[in-house]
Image (cartoon, rainbow, N blue to C red; front, side):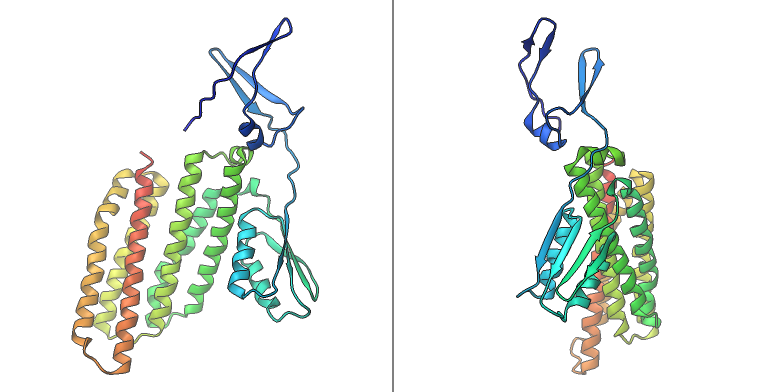
Length: 332
């Protein structure tokens, strides 16, 4: 939405006129007294642009004290600092802190953040990536490729596929998600970065949605793989479950093609067919649990629980695929 701000024209000397500039626009573009403004004469309109000359960015630094905090809380603080654009993150702890290895693992899972110094009381991590040179579309494509591979392999965990392979790919997807979120936030806050990336506000909004959808699909595939590793299924049940998963995987492939090619008709079909995919999941769950609902065997009960969790994540995957289709529909 374009904000229309009416300003009064003021006579200045004998040959010039001036208008005041909106303070919000000045601050948004990090301008100050003496900076140059480009003026483009387009007949009826004058287009004012902030000078595109390169400015040395301010270096942001933060220190995080670990005292009295559990690891999940610390992880949240470190990730939040990364997403908020801090260039240097200092982790302060007591001598020979036992959690130092886990803190280092969190840092390594954030793209571009490298440990530059470690002492008995401090870990210093610095961002080495220039976000002006990162393509959000490339991040999305890399996430999509990894997620597709996870979908192809997760169902095979009931046939002996190692779960660790799926887990490591999910970590890679998370790394890309956080990197993309950091780039998008900086682009929204700084128009210069958005312009250097060649993107518009609507595209940034759409890319944010895509990052979240792909990250959630990867999470569901990781959980499906984990639950399948603890299952013992007969051949017929396994074949039916693989068929359901294959249908959802095909829908994923189709919706991503529609996303890349802006195919509205394909996206609409994926949107409409979501109900049938989720109904198929429900029918399978009912068919499997009905004869075993009164089972007192602990193993049989455990299988029912695992199957229910797998179906829940298959349905969640289908819903996220539908949501991607809805994103594509907005491109018309």
